[in-house]
Image 1: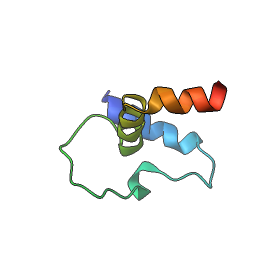
Image 2 (image 1 turned 90 degrees about the horizontal axis):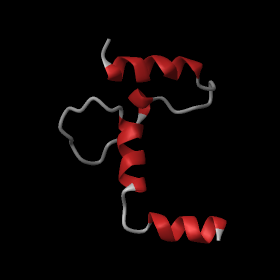
Image 3 (image 1 turned 120 degrees about the horizontal axis):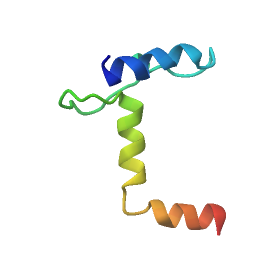
Image 4 (image 1 turned 135 degrees about the vertical axis):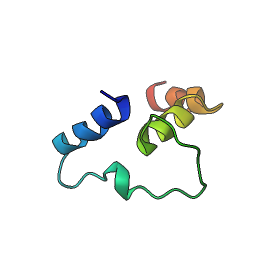
Length: 60
């Protein structure tokens, strides 16, 4: 089974107030990927230059 399909099926377990992947707004066009939009955003945040500084402010 496709990884993207599995991740999108898990959205049925989310709260009724949660924003689903198909409701996400993209400012830039992107190339097709196996990751849903929100997972792509999470990867961009975690691998950004300033993420360690944010963690330091939150937990430090």
